[in-house]
Image (tube, rainbow, N blue to C red; front, side):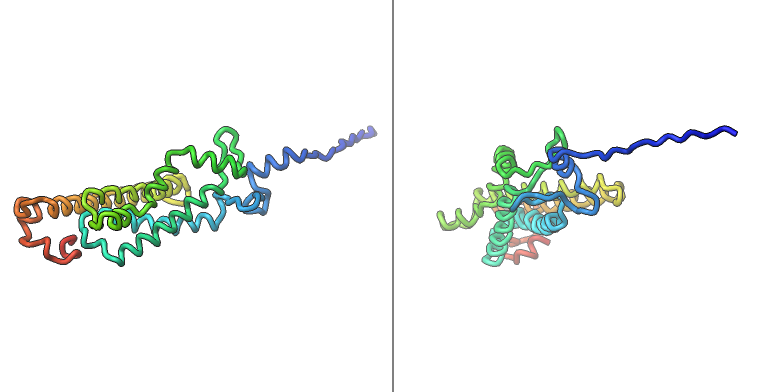
Length: 239
Protein backbone atom coordinates (compact mmCIF):
# COMPACT_ATOMS: atom_id res chain seq x y z
CA UNK A 1 0.00 0.00 0.00
CA UNK A 2 1.38 3.34 -1.00
CA UNK A 3 1.00 6.38 1.14
CA UNK A 4 -0.50 9.36 -0.68
CA UNK A 5 1.41 12.49 0.11
CA UNK A 6 -0.58 15.63 0.70
CA UNK A 7 0.60 19.14 0.09
CA UNK A 8 -0.84 22.27 1.58
CA UNK A 9 -0.89 25.60 -0.16
CA UNK A 10 -0.88 28.71 1.96
CA UNK A 11 -3.24 31.40 0.70
CA UNK A 12 -1.92 34.79 1.57
CA UNK A 13 -4.37 37.65 1.93
CA UNK A 14 -4.10 40.23 -0.82
CA UNK A 15 -3.96 43.71 0.55
CA UNK A 16 -4.73 46.79 -1.48
CA UNK A 17 -3.07 50.07 -0.85
CA UNK A 18 -5.29 53.03 0.00
CA UNK A 19 -4.44 54.66 -3.31
CA UNK A 20 -5.47 51.58 -5.29
CA UNK A 21 -8.67 51.24 -3.26
CA UNK A 22 -9.75 54.79 -3.88
CA UNK A 23 -8.86 54.42 -7.54
CA UNK A 24 -10.99 51.29 -7.90
CA UNK A 25 -13.92 52.97 -6.18
CA UNK A 26 -13.77 55.79 -8.70
CA UNK A 27 -13.70 53.26 -11.53
CA UNK A 28 -16.60 51.11 -10.27
CA UNK A 29 -18.74 51.34 -7.13
CA UNK A 30 -18.39 48.64 -4.49
CA UNK A 31 -20.74 45.67 -4.53
CA UNK A 32 -24.10 46.67 -3.10
CA UNK A 33 -23.46 50.38 -3.50
CA UNK A 34 -25.25 52.43 -6.13
CA UNK A 35 -22.51 55.03 -6.47
CA UNK A 36 -18.97 55.68 -5.21
CA UNK A 37 -18.49 58.11 -2.32
CA UNK A 38 -18.07 61.66 -3.55
CA UNK A 39 -16.96 64.88 -1.96
CA UNK A 40 -19.33 67.50 -0.57
CA UNK A 41 -21.63 69.16 -3.11
CA UNK A 42 -20.36 66.89 -5.91
CA UNK A 43 -23.13 65.33 -8.01
CA UNK A 44 -22.82 61.81 -9.37
CA UNK A 45 -23.89 61.87 -13.04
CA UNK A 46 -25.15 58.28 -12.71
CA UNK A 47 -27.26 58.85 -9.61
CA UNK A 48 -31.00 58.29 -9.72
CA UNK A 49 -31.84 61.82 -8.57
CA UNK A 50 -29.71 63.42 -11.28
CA UNK A 51 -31.32 61.24 -13.93
CA UNK A 52 -34.76 62.32 -12.74
CA UNK A 53 -33.61 65.92 -13.00
CA UNK A 54 -32.64 65.32 -16.62
CA UNK A 55 -36.01 63.72 -17.32
CA UNK A 56 -37.68 66.84 -15.96
CA UNK A 57 -35.47 68.99 -18.19
CA UNK A 58 -36.60 66.98 -21.22
CA UNK A 59 -40.16 68.20 -20.63
CA UNK A 60 -38.92 71.78 -20.50
CA UNK A 61 -36.90 71.24 -23.67
CA UNK A 62 -40.01 70.02 -25.48
CA UNK A 63 -41.83 73.17 -24.40
CA UNK A 64 -38.96 75.39 -25.59
CA UNK A 65 -38.76 73.57 -28.93
CA UNK A 66 -42.45 74.19 -29.54
CA UNK A 67 -42.92 77.71 -28.20
CA UNK A 68 -39.74 79.38 -29.53
CA UNK A 69 -40.64 79.18 -33.25
CA UNK A 70 -44.29 79.81 -32.38
CA UNK A 71 -43.53 83.07 -30.57
CA UNK A 72 -41.35 84.15 -33.50
CA UNK A 73 -44.13 83.56 -36.03
CA UNK A 74 -46.97 84.91 -33.90
CA UNK A 75 -45.90 88.09 -32.15
CA UNK A 76 -49.35 88.28 -30.57
CA UNK A 77 -48.64 84.94 -28.91
CA UNK A 78 -45.95 86.59 -26.78
CA UNK A 79 -48.52 87.43 -24.13
CA UNK A 80 -47.91 87.85 -20.43
CA UNK A 81 -48.79 84.18 -19.87
CA UNK A 82 -46.09 82.92 -22.22
CA UNK A 83 -43.62 85.49 -20.87
CA UNK A 84 -44.08 84.24 -17.30
CA UNK A 85 -43.82 80.59 -18.36
CA UNK A 86 -40.68 81.36 -20.38
CA UNK A 87 -39.07 83.04 -17.38
CA UNK A 88 -39.85 80.04 -15.16
CA UNK A 89 -38.41 77.65 -17.74
CA UNK A 90 -35.30 79.80 -18.13
CA UNK A 91 -34.87 79.79 -14.35
CA UNK A 92 -34.73 75.98 -14.30
CA UNK A 93 -32.05 76.01 -16.99
CA UNK A 94 -30.09 78.57 -14.97
CA UNK A 95 -30.18 76.06 -12.11
CA UNK A 96 -28.95 73.37 -14.50
CA UNK A 97 -26.03 75.59 -15.54
CA UNK A 98 -25.11 76.09 -11.89
CA UNK A 99 -25.34 72.35 -11.24
CA UNK A 100 -23.00 71.64 -14.16
CA UNK A 101 -20.14 73.12 -12.12
CA UNK A 102 -20.59 70.32 -9.57
CA UNK A 103 -21.37 67.29 -11.75
CA UNK A 104 -18.54 64.75 -11.79
CA UNK A 105 -17.38 63.39 -15.13
CA UNK A 106 -15.40 60.42 -16.36
CA UNK A 107 -11.96 60.93 -17.83
CA UNK A 108 -11.96 59.32 -21.27
CA UNK A 109 -8.28 58.38 -21.01
CA UNK A 110 -8.54 56.21 -17.87
CA UNK A 111 -12.31 55.99 -17.10
CA UNK A 112 -11.76 57.59 -13.70
CA UNK A 113 -14.58 59.62 -12.19
CA UNK A 114 -13.24 63.14 -11.75
CA UNK A 115 -14.62 64.72 -8.58
CA UNK A 116 -12.31 67.70 -8.18
CA UNK A 117 -14.47 70.84 -8.25
CA UNK A 118 -11.82 72.97 -9.91
CA UNK A 119 -11.31 70.47 -12.72
CA UNK A 120 -15.07 70.12 -13.20
CA UNK A 121 -15.58 73.89 -13.41
CA UNK A 122 -12.58 74.42 -15.70
CA UNK A 123 -13.74 71.69 -18.06
CA UNK A 124 -17.25 73.15 -18.31
CA UNK A 125 -16.03 76.73 -18.82
CA UNK A 126 -13.70 75.67 -21.64
CA UNK A 127 -16.41 73.83 -23.55
CA UNK A 128 -18.38 75.72 -26.26
CA UNK A 129 -21.63 74.48 -24.75
CA UNK A 130 -21.15 76.81 -21.76
CA UNK A 131 -21.46 79.95 -23.91
CA UNK A 132 -24.47 78.54 -25.75
CA UNK A 133 -26.08 77.42 -22.49
CA UNK A 134 -25.84 80.95 -21.11
CA UNK A 135 -26.95 82.60 -24.37
CA UNK A 136 -29.98 80.33 -24.65
CA UNK A 137 -31.04 81.20 -21.10
CA UNK A 138 -30.91 85.00 -21.34
CA UNK A 139 -34.48 86.33 -21.94
CA UNK A 140 -33.49 88.37 -24.99
CA UNK A 141 -37.04 89.01 -26.19
CA UNK A 142 -38.01 90.54 -22.84
CA UNK A 143 -34.88 92.71 -22.71
CA UNK A 144 -35.55 93.92 -26.26
CA UNK A 145 -39.13 94.82 -25.38
CA UNK A 146 -38.08 96.73 -22.25
CA UNK A 147 -35.35 98.67 -24.08
CA UNK A 148 -37.11 99.51 -27.35
CA UNK A 149 -40.77 99.19 -26.45
CA UNK A 150 -41.31 96.99 -29.51
CA UNK A 151 -42.43 93.39 -29.49
CA UNK A 152 -39.79 91.50 -31.47
CA UNK A 153 -39.07 92.23 -35.14
CA UNK A 154 -35.94 90.63 -36.56
CA UNK A 155 -34.50 90.55 -33.05
CA UNK A 156 -36.95 87.75 -32.34
CA UNK A 157 -34.72 85.33 -34.25
CA UNK A 158 -32.29 85.42 -31.34
CA UNK A 159 -35.03 83.75 -29.35
CA UNK A 160 -34.32 80.64 -31.43
CA UNK A 161 -31.12 80.21 -29.43
CA UNK A 162 -33.28 78.27 -27.00
CA UNK A 163 -33.39 75.49 -29.58
CA UNK A 164 -29.85 74.71 -28.43
CA UNK A 165 -31.53 72.91 -25.56
CA UNK A 166 -32.54 70.17 -28.00
CA UNK A 167 -29.11 68.67 -27.38
CA UNK A 168 -30.56 67.19 -24.18
CA UNK A 169 -33.00 65.15 -26.28
CA UNK A 170 -30.21 64.17 -28.66
CA UNK A 171 -28.18 62.84 -25.72
CA UNK A 172 -31.24 60.99 -24.43
CA UNK A 173 -31.74 59.16 -27.72
CA UNK A 174 -28.01 58.38 -27.88
CA UNK A 175 -28.19 56.70 -24.45
CA UNK A 176 -31.39 54.80 -25.24
CA UNK A 177 -29.98 53.51 -28.53
CA UNK A 178 -27.10 51.89 -26.61
CA UNK A 179 -29.38 50.42 -23.93
CA UNK A 180 -30.12 46.76 -24.65
CA UNK A 181 -33.37 46.99 -22.69
CA UNK A 182 -34.92 49.06 -25.48
CA UNK A 183 -35.51 48.10 -29.08
CA UNK A 184 -33.05 49.87 -31.35
CA UNK A 185 -35.53 49.83 -34.23
CA UNK A 186 -38.36 51.44 -32.25
CA UNK A 187 -35.98 53.98 -30.76
CA UNK A 188 -34.86 55.05 -34.23
CA UNK A 189 -38.46 55.22 -35.45
CA UNK A 190 -39.52 57.39 -32.51
CA UNK A 191 -36.51 59.62 -33.08
CA UNK A 192 -37.40 59.97 -36.77
CA UNK A 193 -41.00 60.80 -35.86
CA UNK A 194 -39.90 63.49 -33.39
CA UNK A 195 -37.54 65.06 -35.92
CA UNK A 196 -40.27 65.05 -38.58
CA UNK A 197 -42.85 66.65 -36.28
CA UNK A 198 -40.41 69.35 -35.22
CA UNK A 199 -39.41 70.05 -38.83
CA UNK A 200 -43.08 70.45 -39.80
CA UNK A 201 -43.73 72.74 -36.83
CA UNK A 202 -40.66 74.86 -37.57
CA UNK A 203 -41.51 75.14 -41.28
CA UNK A 204 -45.10 76.15 -40.48
CA UNK A 205 -43.88 78.87 -38.11
CA UNK A 206 -41.45 80.22 -40.71
CA UNK A 207 -44.26 80.36 -43.30
CA UNK A 208 -46.39 82.26 -40.80
CA UNK A 209 -43.59 84.70 -40.03
CA UNK A 210 -43.06 85.38 -43.75
CA UNK A 211 -46.78 85.90 -44.28
CA UNK A 212 -47.11 88.32 -41.37
CA UNK A 213 -44.06 90.38 -42.37
CA UNK A 214 -44.62 90.55 -46.13
CA UNK A 215 -46.05 93.86 -47.33
CA UNK A 216 -48.63 92.43 -49.72
CA UNK A 217 -50.39 89.74 -47.70
CA UNK A 218 -52.39 88.45 -50.67
CA UNK A 219 -49.20 87.42 -52.48
CA UNK A 220 -48.16 85.04 -49.73
CA UNK A 221 -49.16 81.40 -49.70
CA UNK A 222 -51.33 81.79 -46.59
CA UNK A 223 -52.77 85.15 -47.67
CA UNK A 224 -53.89 83.73 -50.99
CA UNK A 225 -55.79 80.96 -49.24
CA UNK A 226 -57.18 82.77 -46.16
CA UNK A 227 -58.30 86.37 -46.56
CA UNK A 228 -57.57 88.57 -43.55
CA UNK A 229 -55.66 85.85 -41.70
CA UNK A 230 -53.69 88.46 -39.75
CA UNK A 231 -56.88 89.50 -37.93
CA UNK A 232 -57.83 85.97 -36.92
CA UNK A 233 -57.02 84.30 -33.64
CA UNK A 234 -53.56 82.98 -32.92
CA UNK A 235 -54.58 79.33 -32.73
CA UNK A 236 -56.70 79.54 -35.90
CA UNK A 237 -53.74 80.90 -37.85
CA UNK A 238 -51.51 78.14 -36.53
CA UNK A 239 -53.90 75.32 -37.34
